[in-house]
Length: 351
Picture 1: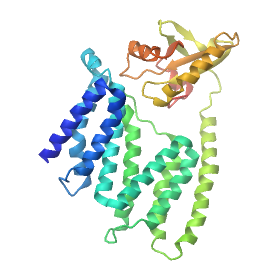
Picture 2: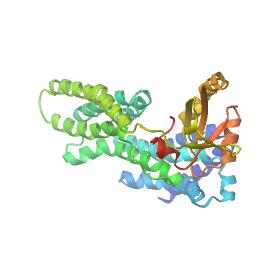
Picture 3: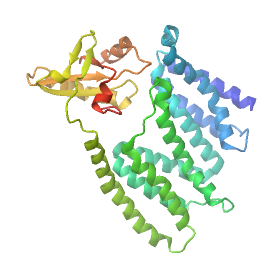
C-alpha cells in the first residue's frame, strides 16, 4: 500500500512539472503514466475500488484540491502557481477514468479489454452524433451482455453492475466535474436522457436473453428498436426540448467588452450573431479559426452585429482569458453578464 501511494505521488509530481513547463506533452504523458502504472503495479487489494483510490488519491491532492481552493478563495498566489490550471482541470476528469479503465483490464483480462474498447467506441460516437450514439449504445451493450463471458457464480445483479457501473461512474463524473472546480451547480443534460436510459435497459434485456435459446433471432428485432429510438425518437426528443427552451420574447441582454463597456444586444435592430464559449471548452477553441473568418467577413456589414461572448467561470480572470485568445486571434472578446445564460436558456457551450 505504501509503495503504491509513494509511486503515485512521484508520478503526480512529475506530471505537475510536465504540465507547468510542457503543457501539451504533460496532458498525454500524465494519462499514459497513470495507465501504465496501474497496469504494472501489483494490486494492494482484491477490491478494484480500493486500488483505484490508492492510485488516484495523490494525484487528486496535488492537482485537484489546489484548483478547488483557488476557485473559492481567488488566491493570487494560487493564480500564479496554477497558470496551467486548464490542463490540470482536464486531467482531473480524465485521469480517474483512465485509471479505472486500466484496472478493469488488469482485473478482468480479455473481458476487461473488450469492455474498455466498447466504452471507448461508445464515447467516441458521441462526438459524431448523439442520435447515432444512442443506437450504438443500445446495440453494443446488448451484445456485450449476451455474449461476453461472465462469471457463472455471480448473481444477475453483480453481472449488471460489472457491465453498467463504469459507464455510470463516467456519467456521474461528467455531471460533477465542472461544478466541483468552478463552483457552479449540477445540471441534468436532458438531451442525453435517451442514452442514459437505453444503456441500463439494454444490459438488463441482454442478461435475460443470454439465458435463452435462439439468441440471434432475439437480437435482430431489438437492434431495430434501438435504431428507431436513436434515429427517430431521440431527434424528436431533441426537437421537443429546443421548442420548450425557445425564447418567445427577447429579454434585455447585456454583454461587457474587454474595455468594460456594456452593450445591450437586445436593443440592436441588426441581425445579432453570438459565439458563446467558456475556457473549459476545448471544442470552442478549435472553432476559433472558423469564427475569426466569419467575423472578418461580417464585421463591416451594416446589417449584422457579431460577438464572441465568453461565459466566465469562477476560476477565470478577465486578463488571462483575453491574453489566451490574443495569442492567436484578433476578434473582439465580450463577457456575459451573470443572468446571460439563464435568459437565453443556455446550458452548455459552444453555442
